[in-house]
Length: 384
Image 1 (tube, rainbow, N blue to C red):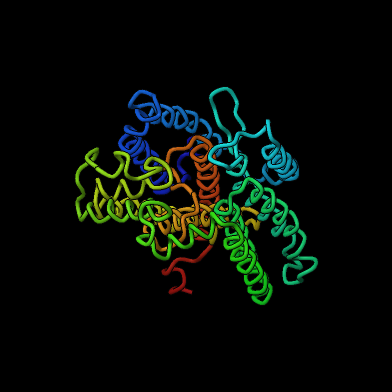
Image 2: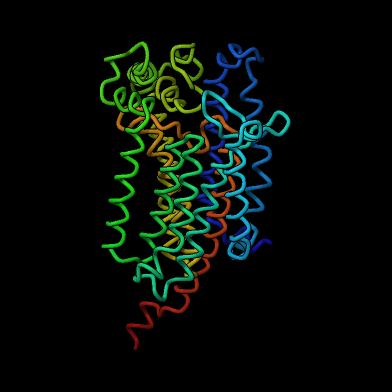
């Protein structure tokens, strides 16, 4: 056990822990007014997020200990389970409808979102399949095509909820695994072009998605309706300046900025903590990106390698989507900011995925030390 903890990537763990604490503090600040408005005590969302974080601690520890090859063995069962869950959640009376979207199961007072589980399950599935197909990964029919059928089904089921943002995030994470698997460039480019065309079609085929695109291009054209959220996000970012108004002193969260504690919590961070607060946040995400890529490069097992890359780019993609939406660089997708935004399912599954990445980093450290031990030192090279 002592050896296990010594081999862990403590830089990566520190970044994850700081992100969780950062998120908890900002949910408290951003969610106070929303809690009161919704008829709860001022710290209602903070207390719920804290409960999920408590649940996440044993989940994280378990994920750092469980051998990652065990996921390989249970992948078919996990994929079957998530497909059933995604089908059931769209059935009226079974899934919970919120704001015209049916994405949750309700268990007591807890809402569980299967699409959040699908994010990590699909990364594990793609890593497993493409690891096994390494001998013929450059053949399209045998090496690349088979898992894409499952991805299309998952994508379609999530679109029924509807949730284009999450479906696209899963598509990109699985695409990252495919790219890292060693598939031919022509296959990657062709699939990327088809996927892009499909996403553009879906984004423009529904009125509410078209309104989001219109608001994204010019939010001030309809600042009281479709552009309301983005305009107030701009105001929050602009008011923050370098150092911000101070923690808890934000104005836009007082009913002006919708979803202040979830999708647009980054705007609250910018207003209250300023550019330096945002830069510190992105430094922590950058550490996860760098350590995750390092893990993927160093680890020898193909499944572990692809799993590390998949989890790393899954988290990074969510950060990119959320930050892009809040800043007006990308259309609003409804994707939360990992570790930071309020949301039990999202937080718990992100912590679980991060725990797997930490576990993989241990194997990367072992591989790195083994490589250093087997390589001759400079003095040995000189004398030989």
